Image 1 (cartoon, rainbow, N blue to C red):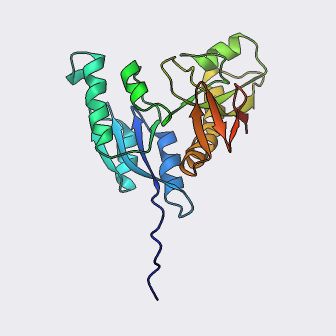
Image 2 (image 1 turned 120 degrees about the vertical axis):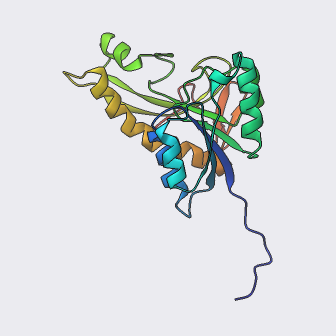
Length: 221
């Protein structure tokens, strides 16, 4: 077989940040094992040494690091150390997958336009915590999850893709959370793939997909 004179296109390099079990992380690891996936998970970093997501990454042959926020005097110094560690992997994309830390403005600005998060609500509804409980208490008929770019506003960055689930009679926050999680596992790797394909970018306070600005709430699955 003769050598191809054209060099293969480098895959998008992704670093995933976690704090816990890593169920969303697993969807990225599974997707990245497919030859058609255009991103590669270069590293998984956790602020907690006992996060099961680290085991998931190691089982997939992905590099892991632990950087405990408890080893730093303040949030700024921790985030600066985190930036240095992440940048050692030369990432094109940084993915928050259950990373339970509020990020400093400097951190967010450093990765502006290449930092993704998923939030368990149909943003802009229910920014912050306890989203499933709040949706039930409000009497909503649907709930869901939103993948968005991260900005300095907590859960306020440009929305990219949402998936909705019906709220059913007798739902508890725990039952509703599980139904939403199934949808999270579908939409988050999809958005990473779009980013890796060059189809998605952040333009000002909006997300742009295939050259067109998305609605404020993003696309619906």
